[in-house]
Image (cartoon, rainbow, N blue to C red; front, side, top):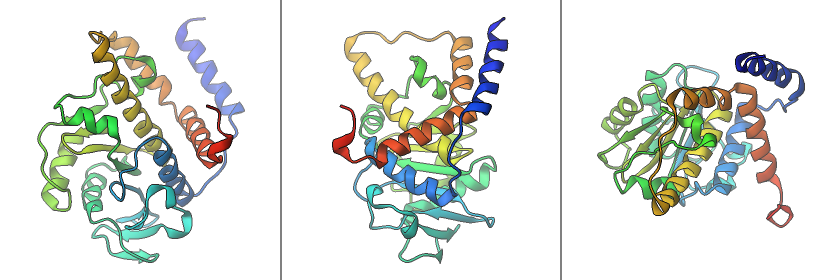
Length: 254
């Protein structure tokens, strides 16, 4: 059997064998906050995660004043595109405003993650785009944009326009002197892509100290991109990360 046939067989086996929890969107958003905290995406109160609500123009997000590790379903907010709180107590991060621009421009996007992970940020201040050159990172191949000029704190509409235009149809963008934005078709995908962006940035910073980064074969990289981003594979990875984040630190493997 050729490779495409074997790939189809593998996908059918995943559909039969991968039994995954059925979580609400709020459960997924809360889990994503805690997962990303564990993977180095926390930066005090900076960063936001949003997901489309049931009604058009509404979004689930975390409450300003809480760190990612403190987010639970009960303290999430439902806001409109002007960040007026519709359900919950407190206020959303004012920087959430730029998420609305992405949602309006990208009907395919169900979740936006914006964080300041240390290795992505380190790469961003060198003016260097993220370079994908390793198999695990291929989910990001030709899927990460780069905003080379910092437009300032993203609390205005102009920043929303700039970031949305930079992102285009891609799943992620590195923002110079700032951080990371991810826009995906599900909460699970956004979480896993954000994790991989930070891992790929760390790998790149390590690799350049050792020597030249060699390019991937584009056809093989695109093949790996589609394989890794298969919906059920992404969902299984998300729930693994959620289980790991839920374990007490002392019980985790070194």
